[in-house]
Image (cartoon, rainbow, N blue to C red):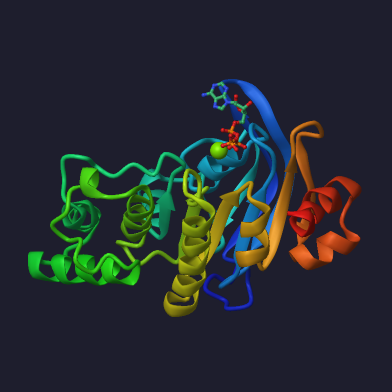
Length: 254
Ligand SMILES: Nc1ncnc2c1ncn2[C@@H]1O[C@H](COP(=O)(O)OP(=O)(O)OP(=O)(O)O)[C@@H](O)[C@H]1O
Ligand SMILES: [Mg+2]
């Protein structure tokens, strides 16, 4: 296996079956995440998007199949090398919580303190830089409670970027935001991808987000309990299965 080959996928999902609370949620998942792409995971509430994401970041063991990151199995083998792999991801979970007792700066510097040998001055410099990237230049000293919902989402995004991840995984980053702020967050994700070269996997159920950010979209179906399509949104709108065309087509009506 040739790791770090620019042409090889960054993430490979092979025959994956996922469970939550002992229940089979999705099975037969086969797809790649290509280097530098934005792959969006789409499906109705409860279909298993967050469950899949938790498996993709190595937090949960698959019921079947495997996930390879840069050619390495995320779920099998010694713990130390797998933990090292997981440190190459930045993750923003659906709840998106910041530590409420810490300032934004401290929220960003904590992972650096835990997982790097950077000194305090360098940790602060990098935290300020990441906050500036998400438009929170002056936010270093602020406490999470002082932020609006949209600012909190951007701060959580900055924290996911703290360790310069190769792969950024975002679970509904726009949820709870008004459409304007949700659209701004989509733009920010594209900007970060362009500026930092980060590969992005983003969960959403917003059609507008799919068309705004996705190079490709992966559709999970709650009844079939498996993926029903993967491809560029514009292609799926024309050539996808009927349910996927109907879902994407609602964007035109909106
Ligand atoms: N810990 C758990 N115990 C039991 N069932 C669970 C657990 N976590 C999730 N589930 C169930 O698994 C299914 C998938 O949940 P999941 O959170 O992955 O859906 P989702 O697609 O992310 O939904 P949403 O769009 O609402 O965030 C749901 O039916 C949910 O009730
Ligand atoms: Mg979810």
